[in-house]
Image 1 (cartoon, rainbow, N blue to C red):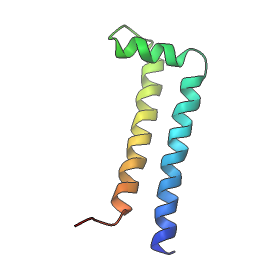
Image 2: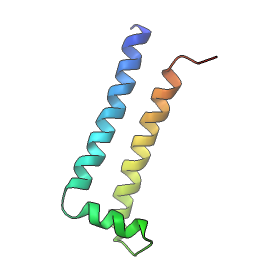
Image 3: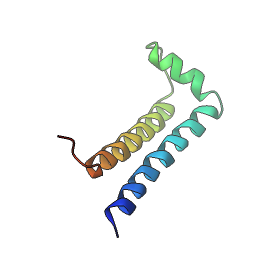
Image 4: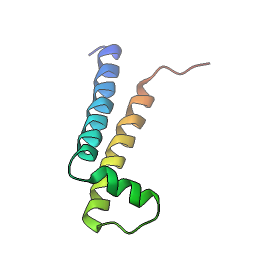
Length: 73
């Protein structure tokens, strides 16, 4: 596999995780709950676990993609 192909796979993983987070936020009232959470209001524990998992998955994909990018000098 070429380096370009690997980079594209990591970038697609970031795009997929971003889409997953956006779809979840668009469902039910997850966006409103996120705003409550950001304003330090109590939120459902299951909702918070899902939000944290999606955030970790996204940040992991971003980190993996960054590792594959050529280093700038």
